[in-house]
Image 1 (cartoon, rainbow, N blue to C red):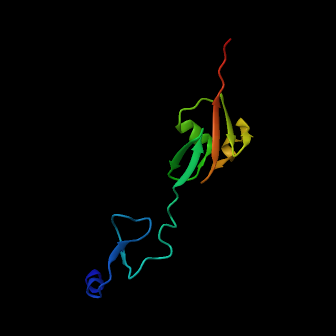
Image 2: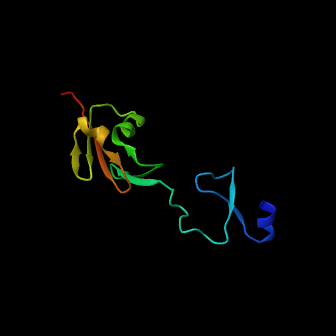
Image 3: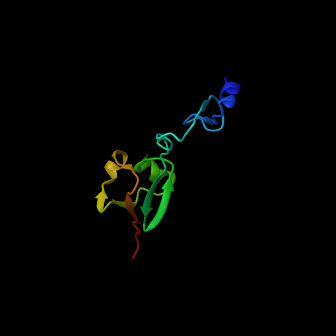
Length: 105
């Protein structure tokens, strides 16, 4: 089949989600679905832009960053209570302020 498609002058390109190998399909023009499965998101953390591969629950994000439970998280201007971290999913455009609580005198 690939030889037939090459003979028709159509380029072969990988199916979405299967880049670099496996079954290939012919395309005569760009698909309107190109990039629809691109889940990269951009969030802002303490004023710094950061790209993530996909939306992620807040608790998993904080854990992956090695942040302790003794932080306060503000998301889009609202404090997120610690017992709700697992219910909040970080999405494209979210703005976080993360503050560590420090004891001492």
